[in-house]
Image 1: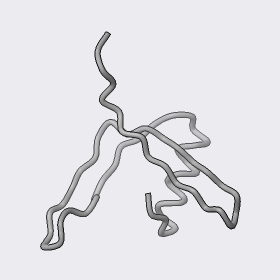
Image 2 (image 1 turned 135 degrees about the vertical axis):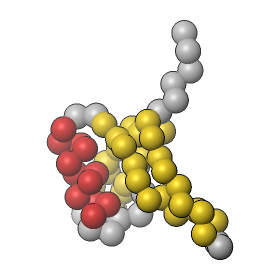
Image 3 (image 1 turned 120 degrees about the vertical axis):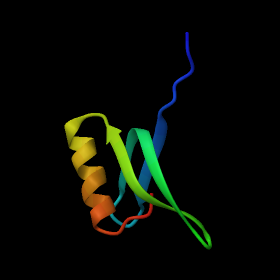
Length: 63
């Protein structure tokens, strides 16, 4: 059996009591002077979780 190459993404907001997780198979990094910045992610899972994670990211969440 081959090892999974999926990357787990997680988000937690203790004040709202929300925890989300999704799995990405592609992450695109843009190097800058301080390191790298994530500029694209392709993630999947249940549609509800994907939508919730996308909404959290667009809302400024740190993943």
